[in-house]
Length: 324
Image (cartoon, rainbow, N blue to C red):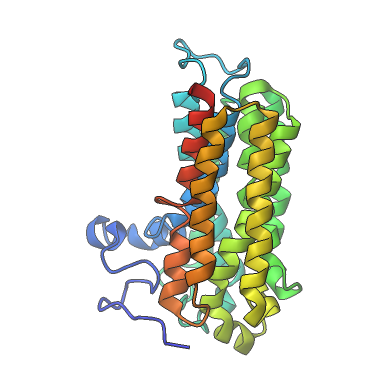
């Protein structure tokens, strides 16, 4: 397997990209903290955010208990909720990544891709990282407290999964399933924030998101499989090995089926299903062209789930299914 490409700047983390805004523009003293929160490579924040926005778009035609001075046009997701979930996703992903780095501090220094992270490289202490995580959590709590009581309880219920996930790779080959449980909770929270309840459509979307995460994070995990074997941690990439593409077919079919079921329950129009054809084509492209032994290709396929990938396509498809 090719070595991970190394940026010319020795302070740039391998998968962040040499032109990331944190290394180019952020104050030097603040860079390690932004890197703890992965603000130098925000793809994970977007992957956390898309299920939230899917849910807000899917529930847009329902009666809202979230009252603002101006209501959105019929069928369109509430723009203020869109903004609140954007902030919440980015800060809570930052807090979760910081917790992950604290938990993995003794592993990260032994893995080529993660050796330059702030804790193993000595840029911040564990205490400083913990304080940073607390500040991010406070911002996330501020966002959560703007919602109704049921949504607040739904959000708090996710914390157990968030705390357990960083340790799963030590005892199971399925840590990607734990990530799916955590990363797609927004599918439930978005619905709860609008209606103060949950519905079968929200659960179908949640299940679809879990399957989607199992797919894209298995691809991502193939970047570290040699290092993971060396240090003794587990992943679905190691579990599936050469059969990865077969598993991706299963996961992505479940994801598409769950999204379609959610749209059917929500009575979306034909435009939604046309959009799903493009989503299916994108996922098929990922599987067909994927080279699990090429680090750069795995990263490219992983990132493709955001811009012009499943995240954006499904969001636009749901909105189209509401308004057309």
